[in-house]
Amino acid sequence: MIPRILLATLCAFLALPPSTASAQSTGAGGAASPAGFADPDRLARLSAAFPEIDRVMREFAERSRVPGIAYGIVIDGRLAHVGTAGYRELPSRAPVDTGTVFRIASMTKSFTAAAILQLRDAGMLSLDDPAERYVPELAGLRYPTADAPKITIRHLLSHSAGFPEDNPWGDQQLAATDAEMSAMMRGGIPFSTAPGSGYEYSNFGFAILGRIVANVSGMPYPRYVTERVLLPLGMTSTTLEASAVPPHRLAHGYRLRDGEWIEEPQLPDGAFGPMGGMLTSIADLGRWVGFMLDAFPSRDEAERGPLRRASVREMQQVWRYSGASAARDTAAGTVTLSAGGYGYGLGIRQTCLFRTVVSHSGGLPGFGSLMRWLPEHGVGIVAMGNLTYTGWGGVTEQALGILSRTGALTARAPQPAPILLRRQEQVSRLVARWDDALADSLAAMNLFLDEPKERRRAAMDRLVAQAGGDCRADGPIVAENALRGSWRMRCRSGDLGVSITLAPTEPAGVQFLEVRPLPRDERMTPAPVCR
Image (cartoon, rainbow, N blue to C red; front, top):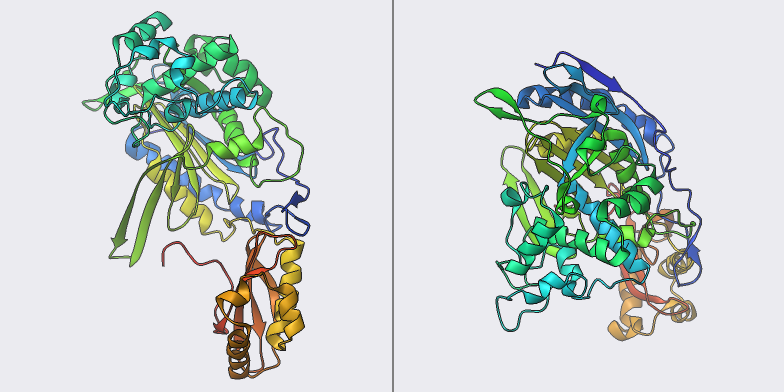
């Protein structure tokens, strides 16, 4: 089906280096290093998955009859691998290459969200401001109920303004002029729900955010996002206007109709561009995902912009819950889970395999794209195709599974604060041999109110005796965060598991303490999401 395959591995492609963070403050007994990856061979082990990923991507393109595709794997802020296949333009049989520029449709929304947060960080607006303050055409909206709140910028960012879902309609609005969009707003926008009461995807809402960017900054949206977001990241191939792309790099979009490819016209940029008008290359999109991943973990390292790391992380938090689904695969005997919602221009989900998956797809007549990444794992996937609504969801999940099977797709390990390590050492001594003075020195004020000291001592002595005595800490603490962790104590004939949580005081005392029997073959690892 696709006779020409071009695959390339591009290591160290992005300008964004991986994090080499300094210590971060915990506010409790000193500093903890940022969470990090322990495996020095992580990149090499993950790279071993690339040939199989290339195979499943080629098979997907052939099976789905996508004329041309480009995809990439981002690891630790860098585009580590790129693959391309097929044609960017069918009549000339011009191949897709790493510089080919595709439309990415609704993935534009994350760039619009970043622009809004830049303006917020500069003190030029608040996310809880009424949108009509910056877009006067909204002042005449007829709200669905007397008690409905005014639409805020936060509502628009999180798809909770109450506007109806508008994907089929929105796809055809890109070329609308500013005057036409103003007339639409003055004419009224119907509500499917009251603002702030639920999630409903709205392209119109993100077009309004683009108008806010323009009105607040005093710059047209395309100029603002180019100068303030794209160019600082080195995204020189990214644009909102198809006519600005050199013809030899532009991917043409196609629709399958009655088994034949029909070319779709390239829509010009207009007032709805902020919701879905962007075009980019696989290299530039890899830079964007690398920038999103580089915001993690929180750390003291100097900011490099163009948006503060805290604001980039804010984009990747659930601000509007959108639902959950769970199902049991009876053949495999496993459970699948998908739960989460929408952040600011991005979707966030939790699955059985990954606690945080950030993503956004993009679909327009002639194109389909997806970016998906795992902030806790430092890995992402980007993919673009020139077939209407190219469905990347399944094959990118498959690619993540292939990476996972290498054993190197692990989450960053949170690092314990010095005070947590100190409390671990003290509690280990207390478990091995109770001492009232030691107990009093480490306990938060609630510990012996929740369970009297005498009862705690008796219970602990029983567990130590059952394990054969002579207990001592064995192995490092498994930190859940800087102030909470668990560890193993190896005794003469059995093991104990010890867990502590520190209190929000200086110095941080132990507010929670649990000691339990621990089978010797049980690993000290965080509990899985689905079990």
